[in-house]
Image (tube, rainbow, N blue to C red):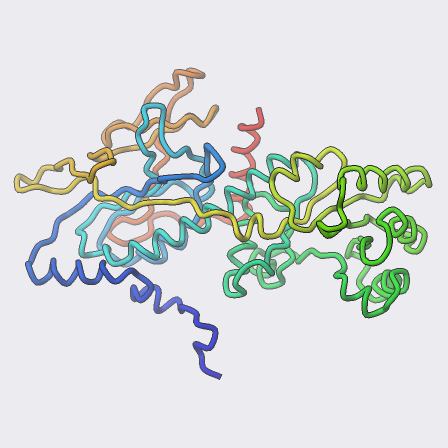
Length: 399
């Protein structure tokens, strides 16, 4: 089999700028031929965050791995930082700042943006779902809705964004957690009997795996829920994956299942739902279910549209000269944030502190120097630290 039979880019190809847009290499050729290069100040800002007035910034480690070894300085918001597209004055908020000669890194603009646009979109959507789900369980079932090569990326984004578990085996392995899942319809169909299938699962699967029965394969959800509760002594829950053509009033179906289980003494049997659920569904059903399985809402989340722009360069007098294309604010900028209310203020680069007008708390710089002359100056944070950082910020939004 051809090593490239799946039409994939390798890490080596990405780091050799083989995945970049061709005009960057043509620009590089022209600049070299004309012996024209500048030390520049570049910022990366979000031009849009679809469906939200805030985003979660992700993809930092990918960017640093891409740029490490280049003769540049790189500043970024920490992985998992909550940010707004612009501050109260309408100035776009830089999430990454790069300082160095353009020819040292210009060719990497395309993959750099690809890393953060995709990951930030998935993490932001997960964080919004986590916020909507309150304290209820949220599991990532999105592996089947993404290219197999990026399923670990989907798992990473879902987990740090707030999902309690992921179904993808490789994604879970890379996260250092156990994969989570219930029963597919195929198991029940192959047995041609729900009860036999549930009992076989109960017999052969390790006891640490929760017994959650899928209850919408052949009969009414209420009937199958009662059947499952009677058949499996330690049933943890039931899952409704009811197809849209059969849902009718899905909320009423869920409420009916809850009533019938409780009426028969199965109060401890939880109800989980899945199947094409979106953020709005989580808002609608959060008070009547115990958990959600979320698929394409996360894995196919709209990317956050980041853009990379030169906003200053060293002029003839060795001074920083503000430059920017139309529609962009020129000049070197810093980003200050209030850690209490998460308000962001964009300032001049040399301003390192301020005061939050909203809560009278200090404003502190959120851009952290990550690479100095191409060398890392900070250790990677653990996945659990990043996850906790995001959850802490989400709790502040909830307040």
